[in-house]
Image 1 (tube, rainbow, N blue to C red):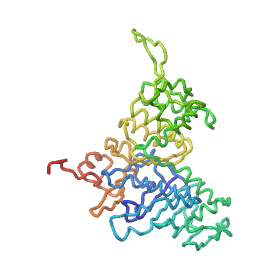
Image 2: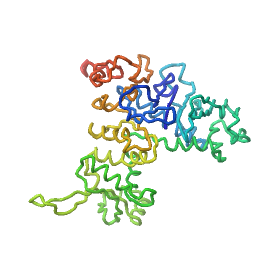
Image 3: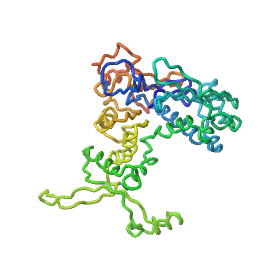
Image 4: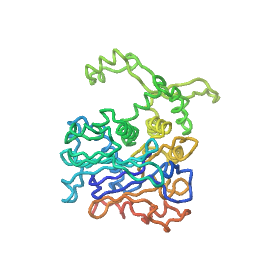
Length: 428
């Protein structure tokens, strides 16, 4: 479970911003909150803001931190990560970037972070833990300054490994590679920290397509779960199949064949191709059921294709109690459908393992207190110097009662983080 994420000097975030999934003491919509020992956490959070306000940069910062950890052993990959500091202030251009995340795993709270400079060198790195008890204190597992490592008494797995790190490698990852128990717990959490952009569903749609094969997976009913989700979205689809199509069945003309690289063409001739099809019911002239008819997925609406692409990540996160971050959740999807996805996470029945959904959006129709508590609503806004700030609606206190019309107030500019546009005029 995610508690907090911090980043400093990344893209439009010049100063440190702190995004939190910890619930406040609000008494409404308690179903949107779950408790781990003495800590109350939110199941969902939405982030609003004008175009270029910085909301997507929050998801990019999360993904960047995850990728640096994931590829820490591959020096060339880490060096290849562009230094994405804040460029609109001379004091921050060459300054290092800082990432920190706080989360719960196995009923222990961990706080892990690092500082990385423009040459991909790790300047500082730290890991702390805290038992989930009222009087428990945070304990240092390790602290690092460049190559100097200070180990805490409970981090014995790091002993003797201090001299095995490079400037560009993370100590946490090195220790995990030597089968460190605590470091492995931290890395496993990051592996279950899922960050995707609904604007670029090409990057993850094939994951959902593979799940439609309904084989070689722990959950043999995963395909049924995907099909049920699509059916429940009130879309005229009876079934979805991922079928093997032979090269001959592709019926490609000579013009298109010439565009395919020779190696790929040989693979197509030899192995064929997997194709996703939707199955619809066909009726006769009296509107009686006649037969089933398959459609190529490309014939379905953009919204249907987006929902299908998102289906496996959403279902898997709900089943496993993981964290899912989606940039532009509502892309090509109707407001009601977006609401239903959010309700999947807010419901105890469909989210028994307390998965968390964090998403950016422009959809003001879901900006209401029947769906969200005020501490679940966040805004990203740039100041006159091009620096983004991130703040929660809960910071407005008494100005937003539980019955306030949040959409109206937001569009009136009461919460900031909206475009300041009187008109678009190309003639001036």
